[in-house]
Amino acid sequence: MNVSLPTEPELSQRALERCEDALVRLIAEHERLTLAYVSERVRRGLPSFCQDRELATVRRFRLLGPCGIDMAVALLRRARAAVGAARMVDAPPSVGAPARQRSVDAIAA
Image 1 (cartoon, one colour):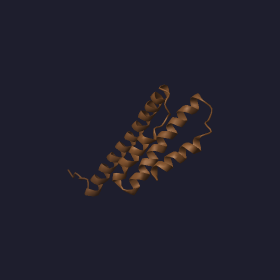
Image 2 (cartoon, helix red, strand yellow):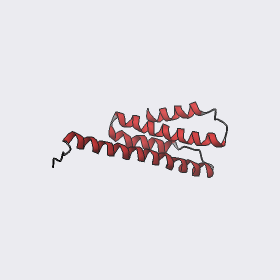
Image 3 (cartoon, one colour):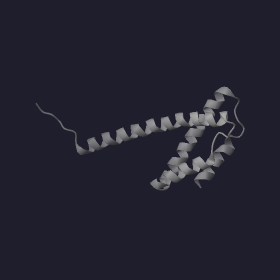
Image 4 (cartoon, one colour):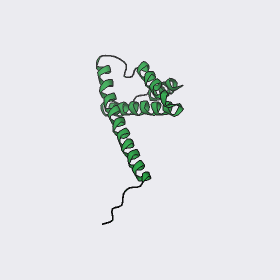
């Protein structure tokens, strides 16, 4: 019986795919947690987003270099988009969306 063992590149590709799958799951979990966090902040009468927390996120991702900052901003944008989408179900569209986007961009600068 001939058994074909995976080659080194195939093993590496599988490991990368598992890592990428984990990242996708973590990003989805981040969005779910963000929705819960923002809901609680709003329930307490606080602003939806806290720039100090967002800035801390960017600082943590800076450890990954310049692309890390891009990843942090993308993660924060996804979180804001998820919150915006959830709000659209309950309320008319907000006029302040461009201003919120500028604040995320300013944090990354």
